[in-house]
Amino acid sequence: MTVHFVANCVYSDHVAGGDIHFFEMARAAISAGYEVNFFGGHALQKHLADQDIAANITLTDHQEHPGIDLSRFSGQVALFRDYHQRYRRSKRLTDVIKHGDIAYAVTDFWFDVLPVVSSTARGKMMIWHMQAPRFGQVLARSRPDVDSVRIASLHYWFGQRLSLRRFVGCKHKRMLYVHPDMQQALLGRGFRSDEIEYVSFGVDPSPPGKKESTKIFDAVWIGRVHRQKGVEDLLATIQRLSKTIPNFRIVIIGKVEQDLRPRVEQLGLAPFVHLAGFVSEQEKFHLFRSSRVYLMPSRFEGSPRVIGEALVCNIPVVAYDVETYRPIFGEFLRYVPRYDLNAFVGESERQIQAMRRGENYLDSLNLDAFKQACSWDTAKETFLQAVRQLESS
Image (cartoon, rainbow, N blue to C red; front, side, top):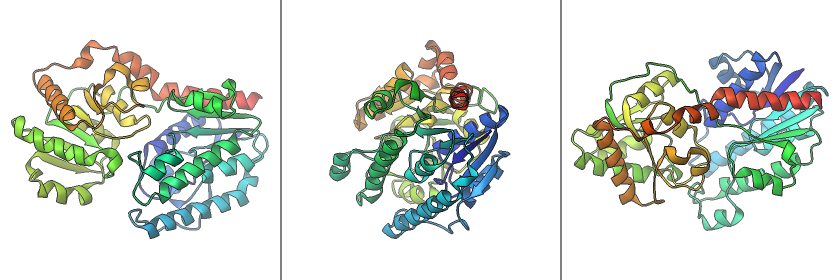
């Protein structure tokens, strides 16, 4: 039997959290003895080679797109065309999926879900990673991930509704969801309780590299430049901490230098900020362990793996009290009122000073239980259990 991963969502050299999740689920399927085949483009083919995943791939494009600038309307149109091309080719190639196989949509986007729905696979699976903004939130731009143009958010809203509506009509199916609050939403959309399953976002409970590292940085942040990520609050926090904490330093990880360096220099923050750029997983965890506190000024997130990665490295996390965090992270974060910059700066300073004194609030909590519940092993077993149930149905 073959498990087909439909991953038309991959279009560039960027690796997102959802990509890492389905890479690990593919490894689980291969280790369990299943054949694995991917539907996706040339960009995905490169990622599979880089990840050393021994799977087949059914190519759904003729070549990788040379580059898409999503900050421009023309770039968003180009991306839509790129997705649509892979979707149409997937529909033409679904005869690769045999009746006894399992087909898995690795996102809730229509170009991954609809080929699974229309296939002849015996069992069909889908994962729901994050709730799209509601139509009213898009119009009012009241959720931070909605940009001023709104086209991408409207596409997200409509596409997710379409995917869920079509998938609920499948006979033998399993819906995986990554946040506890999604359970009631799925039941309300017509899914049965035995058709849905919570799956962890997945973390390595023992990340690569030395467990103990010299603390070089007071703070660490990883992300992309977008208003959703609270970058302006991050910069304001750095500016104020640099004045109140002697020899303050922060490391910023990710492909953000082009966007952030001019702003950092304009604010006079260059002496306090190390822009590490895109780094390997091992280097990322080394930088985490070399830091005292993780700053999370995001204004909206689903179930961000980066918080889990900070926690398994025993790093305190300061975050706005975003509504999606507490059901997953509970007491392991230090929350401040949403978008209260003064509170965020104050709590960040307290945690940094405490860590400089050798005091870490995580030492008094049962972090081992969190690591086990959110581990890759737990997530993989959930995925494989769903596959086995569909295989025997």
